[in-house]
Image (cartoon, rainbow, N blue to C red):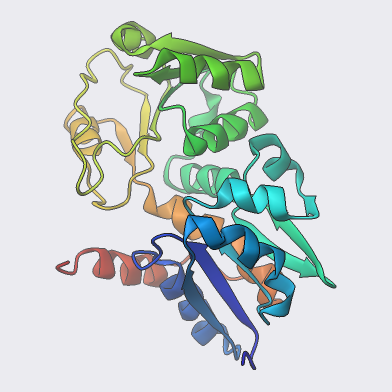
Length: 279
């Protein structure tokens, strides 16, 4: 039986998530009674869990892969970002009504604003990948009025579908054209799993990028991916993906527990230390 206000993260698997560590840190720092717990839910059970969410006793929660689209279908109301992306990563209750939002785009922007101020003065951004994370990034870039957003994916059909969904200024490009696409890019964002622990590395030549370009890898395990290491060797601004994870968690915590937390160096150090632990 849930007593103190408790939020939850739904995913499959969910054991690897650092979200409980983030929210429990904020609860302790702010002196708020409550908890944030992982709840692993198999894909075949997610609809049942979401449809009965109000009866579980949680004040709300987060949704991670592979359940974000199912959560969007389950909520009675979705915010504008979730509606545009067709994916929900944050849940809360309005009475017994399940409501959803998406904070991935806001987390992406806050991370870049913090680590690379002025990044959005560029006219051209290149996004690697065409999955759910790419959709959030493209929405965010459109919101900052980036004039040209090029989505590059190994499967061109997926990039074209994403570009069609958003329309101008988004365009799709084949992977083989990447060197040419980088020549005028002020921002390069990797939204794929390449470079993540357990996956092949992202091996691309960054030589065509302008000297003022920013390289952002959404991967945060490891923190220093091959792509970011290559960017640093070129003396480009390199931004890891951990900040996006931290910043996207802020709105949900505020909604569930009534206080707006801060993303601090102490919180980042806590998560970095955990990432560095042996598996």
